[in-house]
Length: 486
Image (cartoon, rainbow, N blue to C red):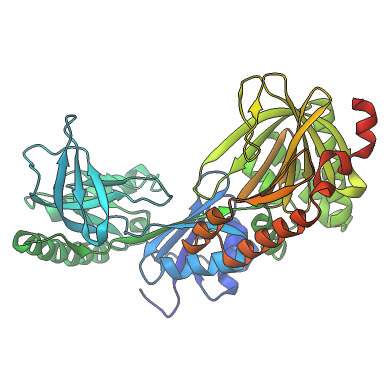
């Protein structure tokens, strides 16, 4: 790393906000787009990045970089954005290990025991028997709970401009180097250097800014590292880690984290609250935000525009009332609940009512009651609080309620989306209640997936609801609707 600051390259729809946040925290923004340069008031810096931050799906940020740099950037983002889910691979991307074959499958794959008690799957294990030691590299780390580490016998070491690969002779180029002439030149340069070596290489996007001497010098250094790794592997008698690879982590962006990003973007560009939520779904709604932000400097009243945008959302829900409900779990799973129909918006109380009718049988979580086709859920969504109330009915009979504890939901045209905080409150038809799944919340907090402050907030909200559970049921929240039902 050159200079005294970690160099970060930022890409995607959050680029302005993340770049501003990291710049304010003392990081060095490199290879910024022209519009980011203008907004931040910085000159173009072609230096290679130590860390890359980019969108990974509509509600996640991927942080990838050298250890000592990537983890530092990741921790700053998590701390500053606050209410997020965070997943970090315990084992580095492209880390190199001597592993032991523990199981060979009929499809030709095998399970490899790695140091630290980890296991990974190697797709092709021709000639490998249980007990055999083998040199492998991690090509897909396990970021989220339940994911599988995937391994390869193609071992790579990563530099600033080039990744050098043992076990392959392929030469590949980053998709971000789009100039055909530049791509051909770089391939020719690296091929001439590696001819006869039996090694392959991948040219990283930073190589388009590098001089020939820098690339050639780096290849020499990486080649020395590879020779050393292969030598250590031949002498190994037990599983061992030979090369740490790169740090990799994911940040799950809740509604409140997106509001923080909105704030940072607003420091350098006209920004309405909700910018990153609307941008995450794209399509025509992204263009609506662009238009609103063009108006903002002329109107100079962000609250007025925010109100108009919210009126637009409500109007869309009235005219196109089918609502999809996305439930995001701390393990990264995204569950689509049974869709509902928009019924009512109580602006003064910040409540939204959705009616869902079940078509399939099942069991109501927490209540342990049979779910029958035709049952309905009168879903009350609190727009600015940390709960959603499910109220189950069979005709006029109230079967009970399930108060879900979650981050404040994102409300978009036809979409309700929130991050589930696991702990919940169940309310019986008798009025008695209980808190469930507290242990799950504690488990994910202990794994640093849910921040402690957010976990404490979730637990306090559950306790608050459990003290007066009927106040969070449909009967009390939407009293006038009871007359309509009866």
